[in-house]
Amino acid sequence: MLELAILGFLFDEALHGYELRNRVAALTGHVRPIADGTLYPAIKRLERAGLLRRDVRPGSAAAPRHVLTLTPAGRAEVRRRLREPDEVFITDENRWFTALAFLRHLDSPAEQAAVLRRRLTFLTQPASFFWDGDRPLRAADFDDPFRQGLFTIATATSRTEIRWLRQTLASLAPLIESAPVAP
Amino acid sequence: MLELAILGFLFDEALHGYELRNRVAALTGHVRPIADGTLYPAIKRLERAGLLRRDVRPGSAAAPRHVLTLTPAGRAEVRRRLREPDEVFITDENRWFTALAFLRHLDSPAEQAAVLRRRLTFLTQPASFFWDGDRPLRAADFDDPFRQGLFTIATATSRTEIRWLRQTLASLAPLIESAPVAP
DNA sequence: ACTCCATACCTAGATGTCGAGGTATCTTGG
DNA sequence: CCAAGATACCTCGACATCTAGGTATGGAGT
Image (cartoon, rainbow over all chains, first blue to last red; front, side, top):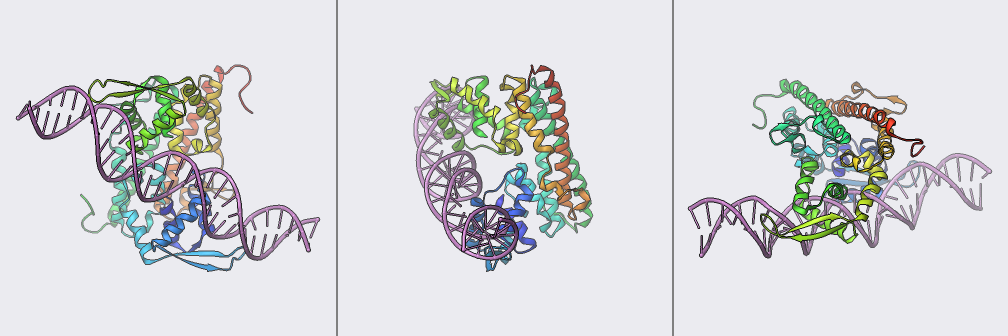
C-alpha cells in the first residue's frame, strides 16, 4: 500500500523523500500515520528494485534533499500494479482507496473500468457479514446496538460506493472502443 | 486487531481454534482474510500471556480440539483494550469496526459512550484529505473522477457514521448516572 | 556566539502477518 | 480395506511495519 502511494505520487512528478512523506500523510495519514522508519526503507527497496532513481541536491531550506524520479521500469510498475491489483487491494478499504487515488495513471478507460468492475463485483457479492446463509440480514437482526451500527454503517457506505461505481462505469463506457477488456 | 477479535469472541463463550477461525473469517474475512499461520501463533501468544486457557478435548468430527477459555486476566484485558483503545483503533476503519463489534463487552454505558465520543471527535475534526488549509474541499475541486469518487464516498460514509454516533450517544446518555467519565 | 527548531534522512531491534508448507484424526464412499 | 476429503492444529522463513532512537543542515531568535 505504501509502495503504491510512493510510486503513484512520483508518477506525476519527481519529489524528495520529505515532500513524499507529507503527501502520503495528507492522503492516508489521518487514518494510519506512516513512520519515517517505514517510509525511508520503502524508498530504498524501490530504488534497489530499479523503480526509482535518486539525485542528491542541496536542500533549499536545510539538509540536502534526495530527489526521487521514477525510472521507465517504475512507470511500468505503477501501471502494472494498478491494472492487476492483488485481491486485498480490492477488498480492503484502505488499500482500495490508495489504488483509487492513482487509478487515473492507467491511460486506458477500459483498464480503469476493469478495476472498478472488480470492486463492484466484490461489493455486490454476498459477504458472510451481511448474510445469514441465503437470508439477507437487517440491522434489527442484531441484538446489540453497536453491531447494529456496524451493520448500518457498512451497508450505507457500500450502497454509496456501488452507486458511484455504476455511474462512473456508465460514464466510462462511451470512452471504451471496440471490445471490453475482460468478460 | 486479530487479538482483539479473538478475545472478543471468547468473551462470550469458550471456542476451539477452528471455530474461532470461522468466526473471525465471518467478521472480517471478506475484507482481509486471516491465515492459519497468523491465527494459531496469536492464540499461543495470548495463552503465554495468561489471557486464555486451553483444554484439549476429543474432536467431535475429526482431530482433537483445543477449547479456549478466557482467564479472569483475559476478561479484564478485553475490557481494558476496549476502554482505552490505541489511537489507530479509533482512526483505522478496519480496527475501529472490530472494536465496535465487541464494544458491548464494556459493561458501563459511560465507558461505551466515551469510546464513541473519541471516534466522533476524530470524524468531525478537520482532516488534511478533506481540507485545503481552512477551506473545506468539494468533490468538484478534484480534477480527476476517481479522486472525486474517493472524496464523495469518504464524505458520505463519514456523514452516515457521524449521524449514527450522535444518535447512539443520545440514547446512551440517559443510561449514564451522575458524572461522565472524562472531560 | 549560542541555542532552538524545522528540515531531511537514516538505522536497529522487535513484532505481526503471510505464504507455503506439514501432520494427525475421523468420516464417507467405493 | 483403502483412498479421499473435511476437520483441526502447527512450523518456518520472508517481509513490511513500528518504535525509538540517531545524525546533519540551515535559519531564527537572543
